[in-house]
Length: 132
Image 1 (cartoon, rainbow, N blue to C red):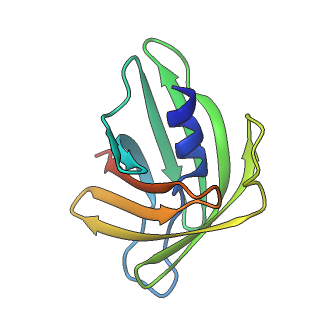
Image 2: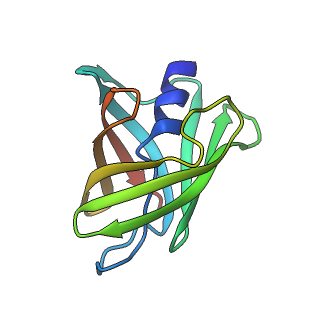
């Protein structure tokens, strides 16, 4: 769980409109990903959720039957098919706070795919589904 949260924190997080008619605005649920070539399914026993405004995001972990726990926040900017995320808050020690992380993104219907290489060297590809 910690590695998945850490990967999401390093995430690819992210998002909204800048020179693009597309936007990440809304609530998104984590649906799995590929980390350094290893496929991981969605989380078991808890949900990872992100809420995006036009320029900011907050990330929450929700254990079965529990209250949402905010674990990360930041801001993001979209340009073309690229997203730059800057973490401004993390509940865990993080070397990413204040560091710009770049991702490519793809929006298809209610699905968001984020791809990038984190400053740690980890290759990530994450899948998020928009809440209706």
